[in-house]
Image (cartoon, rainbow, N blue to C red; front, side):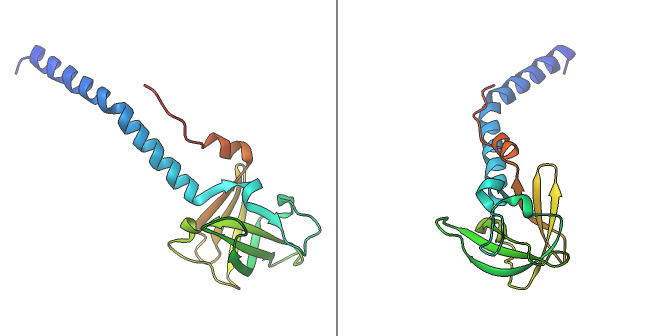
Length: 155
C-alpha cells in the first residue's frame, strides 16, 4: 500500500466516522442523561423539612451521619421513596426528608434504623450508605441540576 492510498483510506474512514457522529452523540448524551437522572435531582425537588423541624428548607442539612427514621412512598411522586433522616450526633432534633428515585435504590434498598452519611459538596449534597460510604443519590444545587438537562447537539 502506498502512502497516497493509505492517506485516502484514512480520510474515507474519518469521513465515515464523522457521518455517524451525530447519532452516536445523541445516544451517548441520552444515556448520560438517563443515568444522571436516576441518581440525582435538584435540592428544591428532593429535600424538605419534616413536620418536627422548625424550618422546612435544606439549610438544616449538614455533613454527618443520619439515622433513617421513616421510609415511605413520596407523596405525589411516582417511583420515588421518601426517606426521613435524623442527625445521629449533635442536634438530634435535626430532621429532614429526601425524596430518592427508586432507580437510585435499585441495587440496594435503605432500611429503617440504617445510617446514611450526608456530605455537603460544592454542587449540593451526597447521600451515601453509612457502612460502605458508597454514594447512592446526589441532591444538586438547582443551577447545577439545570446544567445537566438534555440538549440536542448538532455537529
